[in-house]
Length: 378
Image (cartoon, rainbow, N blue to C red; front, side, top):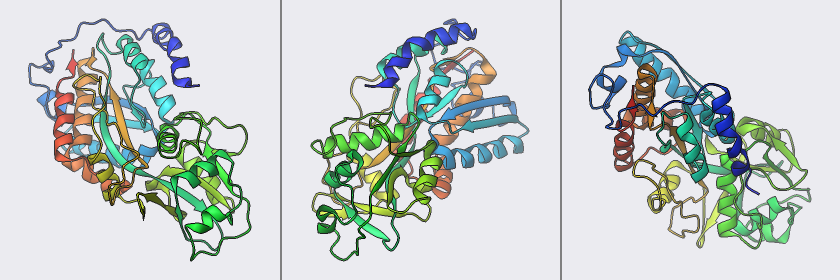
């Protein structure tokens, strides 16, 4: 069962109770309130005009990148005389989208693009316009483990699926040994660790398993872990902490936070591929855009089953959920300036240096900037 859809019915009510429903009074031309073309800082007016507070929340996978982004962006605004504080709370994708759709935050980070029902509900808090998804962060999802005496592993999709489904339960299982002839695998129970919160990382990971190993993983792509019991952690940091605290543990997390844990090379075609920013970017490059989306709603339909050499298909494209219109000019211009920075070459470089992410291609960056420019304010 997809819990995301079950929560949608209450979102409109939440926004109305909070007095946050906005009228559709924005200029849909994409021009800023000052008559500019809406591009660049503060709708074309410069960072000096940015003041107040801008709050976002969501995907914990983006945590390291968002920490670097907010600090560097605020430094730029302060250098020009602006006084804008930008905060990001890594609550998890599900909570971030809920807070965005109820008007508690002005943007959300999410590892799973907004669904049709969420897009429809967004008009309540988006000045009558629909929200959209903007790709800002591309990163591999690492399969992390903590096994005393074992530093590296090769794992096929079928084995990973069976491990997390609870059907392979010991590290010396013949199916694991077959792909790791040089490893000394212990007679040790496998302890799978999953996310305890609604997680876009979980959805991306289980989407990969359901497409590449449907016989081993039969639960489909889900955001909330479907199997009772087992060990878990809240958010990316909580999962990593749980894996670190055990022996024989295995989990999945944004690679930027894998730390000193062992990470598995994943079987793609006839080779085992270790995660890297380049391999993640290549997986995105071979994947098409999702169909049935508005022009400014940029969502990648990841090809999890690719056998292209050098690709790492356990990858997430993490998005920024933004409104198509903001009634408050100062608020809208702050959102546009921050989003423009994130998709810029400089912003993507900051994320790559601080979180190990793969920068957006120049083509995707230009497309994302065009979508930001189209946001109407005032």
